[in-house]
Length: 417
RNA sequence: GCGGACGUAGCUCAGCUGGUAGAGCGCCAGGUUGUGGUCUUGGAUGUCGCGGGUUCGAGCCCCGUCGUUCGCCCCA
Image 1: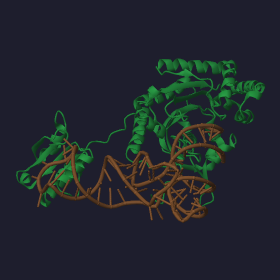
Image 2 (image 1 turned 60 degrees about the vertical axis):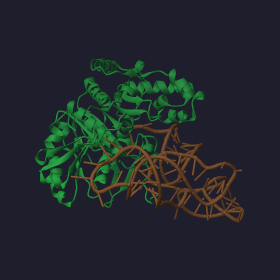
Image 3 (image 1 turned 180 degrees about the horizontal axis):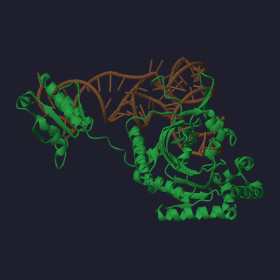
Image 4 (image 1 turned 30 degrees about the horizontal axis):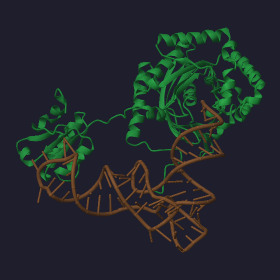
């Protein structure tokens, strides 16, 4: 066993892992583009204030889970724990608050210092969407529909359920929080120890407690709907109507909550039962207050993020790599011609490989091992006639093909081999 | 930060109440010096995660530690 191991919570993406990862990104990007989203890449580390300004006061735990350090110049920087803050910072610093709406897609690594679990790493990867500018519920519906289409294209939508809720506007939420505190205080004796702490710190979190006793109490808790202002209620009803129109199936889950104050109105999660307790595969909501907290003007926005590792684990069939053509010269004199064929195939867009050494048997074995669909065998007597043997490794049949026609032969037939 | 399970060959794992390591797959070579997949013969490979302890003797028992994993907490 090697002395040097990857740092706890990090891992290498190699072979099938990498292909799953890349397939998730490629699929999401393609569909996001069809919705008009444009890809942004923002730095993986930012001035610590980019995150502390929006997250810092609300929960001190958040600070403990961030990778924060002083750089050589003495500035505090932080590896980004999520994507939205950086996008909002970039929006403001690039003056794009003057050019709304902005429809942003991103993909990349995020960092959180926490205990690794299934599909949950210290360096993990997310894809995400941010639709910044529109205040209309149609924007929420588009963002959700795009997420749904991505899950569908990945083949994981069948396992996932979209759960939606509204957090209302500020007045609605304040009224609701007060009602919750009143209700749970009345049931204080039956609450779990964890939830008693939540009651002090973050009462809405009791709603998604995993404790069985808590769940019974939560079942009788008031929902936000009685406390919604008329505007908030209309917003939510309109969103649901739009989702029906987009044919995105959903269930309402009044227990979905968000910890931070800049969230309001829409909150949603795509949940699967296939990943143990880490069942949320895509989560998002409306955050009308965040851009302002980043120093920009009051700007409505809605978005989601999804863990690439978790989505990759849900892919039923691992993405395949292109089948190769193996070029096999027999004898030193054939090597030059083999190199010509090799490049002609590559330049025609095919995956072509040539082993550097070994006899014919060994090279055919290797061709088999890399999953080659065909082998081009160049012997000296064939070369003298200007041909090579092209062997279909599936059927074993073999045919002499003029050297100049090999690329066309391998790609141009009705049933390419 | 807390709790359970697990660390043995490149991979998946076996290894009895303690007697100084095994299988399958893979890999390498031959049977077959210009024809792969199947078959067959042979071969290489381990600080048994690491450190300490008990013992005549530890892969096995004890303590510690690191890591993995499943949960809890948290979840921006």
